[in-house]
Length: 165
Image (cartoon, rainbow, N blue to C red; front, side, top):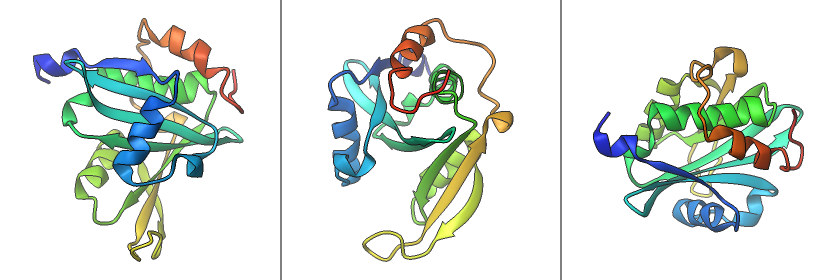
């Protein structure tokens, strides 16, 4: 982990700017996700990534991630994003969809501990297949040591429609 990566700041999306940035980067419409909560990752005053929590229902949440720099992915950030899903939102599972051709994202989600659970054939408008990945709280290796600033993010997350706790 580089020194620069250690200083990646995590910002809550209070005005929808992070969610809009993520959706624009992925070429999807913001309204497709419904009610959501988002976090932005900032390095040297520029956005390098964002994560949207959406589709929260029955203890399960979907993640949509967009990044432009791999330095967002630090242990500290991982503890926060998983802690927010499993502890603050009260989820027992996280779901994510990855395009079959997105080799870097496939490597990332597998490395984080997600398990491939299925294939969505011809899911994208282009006819591309996608994989569905899931992670149960009991499988998450990123929980444990709690981050200091997670408590303020957790209190905001409890306002998210469908959040547990």
